[in-house]
Image (cartoon, rainbow, N blue to C red; front, side, top):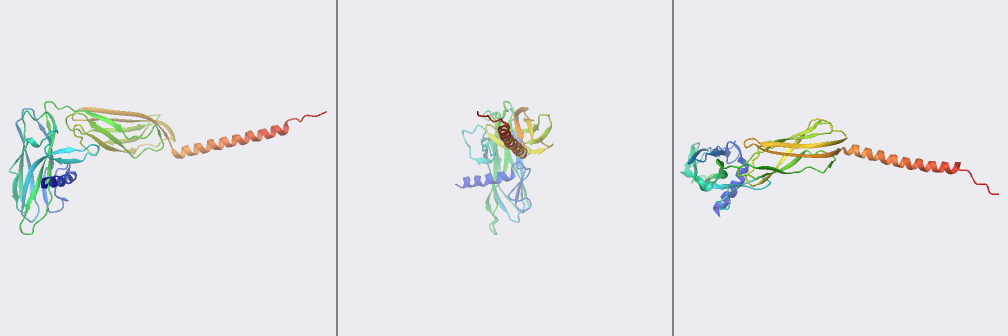
Length: 317
């Protein structure tokens, strides 16, 4: 039960420190614990027996703290991309916890003291090529006896890529674009990517909207925040548009999305045609059409009245 609570604390924490160089127990301006680096992307050669990682934990408090470090697996939830710490799962092909060895996991830090935590990533034939994801949680196991200080967990994430069989695969599965007839260009759209390979990927790309005269009217950048997609998961990434030119009131347009994953040379593309009609212009056009129809009916009716007046009357004898 205690370990489950620790992992729940870690889930909240990892959202705070994900992909930053320094992890911290709260705001970096407060005097708490810090760990550096908080994230490492590790490449393991197929023939390497072991890789050593070192993390620096600093006690910025005025109290002595007793700490305990242990390894867990990292899982990415679909669509949202949120990170979850989990215990070893035999059904998880991307587990890393079995191959993480925390050297001297129990230690204490005096005020302002630093500690170098060593983590060994072990390699053997059971560690399959491709991506494996884990983390090391650093928990305050016992505060100082006098004037205890309450501190949350720290976490360091380890994203491992073992060479010798890594297979990248990326699909742009769906695009949250409106219908073929568009009254207004949205400020942003959602792109759902599917990682069908066995290593984590970071897709990038560009979105363009051009009218029938090939004028570039809107542009967007895909994944400006460098979000990562785990193997065999899907993730929604929001892309924001920036207008580059004025739109015609009525136009035939095409939206094009092209991108890749630079490290692994995986490409994706999307294209769709749509008609844009400015809502106010459409209302004005409808008003003109309705006015023209009504006027025509009035003219026809008036013409009939005139014809009735001019029509010669029959003379009866």
